[in-house]
Amino acid sequence: MIAIVDYGLGNLHSAQKAFGHVGIEAELTSDPARIQDAAGVVLPGVGAYGDCLRGLEEKHLVEPVLEAARSGRPFLGICIGFQLLFEGSDEGDVDGGLGLFAGRIRRFPNASDTGLKVPHMGWNQIAVPEGRTCPLLEAGASPYVYFVHSYYAEPVDDSIVLAECEYGQRFPAIVGKDNVFACQFHPEKSQQAGLDVLRRFGNLVHSPVG
Image (cartoon, rainbow, N blue to C red; front, side, top):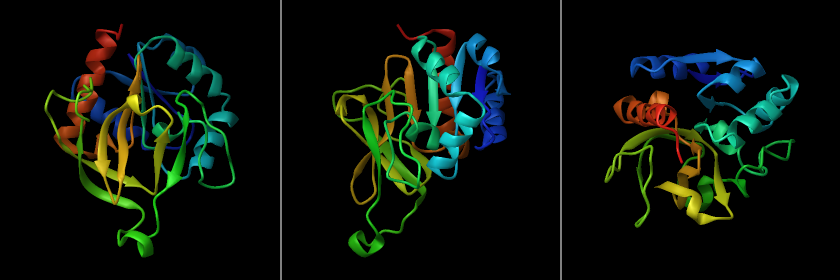
């Protein structure tokens, strides 16, 4: 079973429904014991970075989430759940993060600087950097996926970038190291391409990394 962490924010039912569509059992839960027992864990998130971080803290889920990520079990962050895995964000009044990846979340430049609207919203193509592989994408795939975000990750270690996207600049679309992966886009809103990402994550759950 995959546990989708329910901390009061996020597109939880859509993510659960998308997993079900590809035949993978996923349960919404805020119970640390269920998170601990799950074969894989998903940390979703929509809205503001600070609200999501406070939601985890208020429900006493920071340590259970960190323990899940450090346990070796497949772990997936989605959208703000992606951003929370870094050390902090320039968004809002709350700093800090889960710190699983070194780096910071930065805001896209304003439209006056680039001619591009912020937030970055809609379909865009992602690609795996040359010489790398991404377990969440089929080899050679460069799918179009659905984004809604104003902030992007600036990792210290570029090697964690498993897929990237272009929106006035290159930015990470998928990051990952060992058992921990994260997507800046919304797989549950990305039609077949997103379902393929969730299916491949499910395969990791049944055939664990490492």
